[in-house]
Length: 215
Image (cartoon, rainbow, N blue to C red):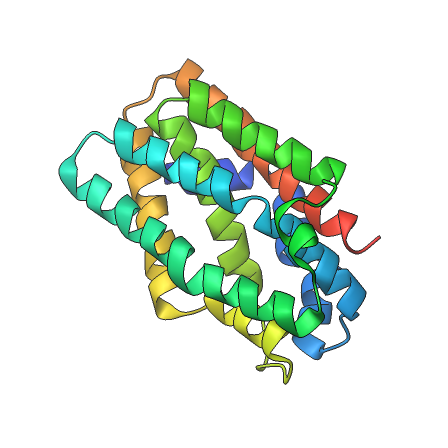
């Protein structure tokens, strides 16, 4: 394989990949035209991923093949449980979202599908497969967030973009990609095919999640 494994995966996930990073939902975030109703439903559903995402990171820590990798993954857990969680709570307050909707909302089908993918990968996937799902979740968000032409006035929009377009997040995504490239170099054809299916499935989940809060 002459190209990086992550570039190979992304290239075989088009046009879905581009549909995620150029989704109209993100354009509405950038220009301030996002209705509060749409943003509220999006954030409430996105918050339901936090626990499963942390568990997926924990599974990656457990299955990583070297100490330095465990340290990098553990650092991301700290970010999710601090800066990102604080953003959610401040945004829920600003949007008037009650406690029951924060912790026990009715889940959209798109939310259920993505949670099921995370849980299945956590329980049954190897290190490369877990990295694959993590990479899609983080890399797509970096890709759309860095497209923002300017910082919106509404902090709910602006800080969500900033959480996914700051230098630390860019470094994290770069590490995820390099780690998956490293691990992917030793996979056989069957293992690469499994990662590709997961990469494509996770990318499709990202599209469906945006669509659920835009269509």
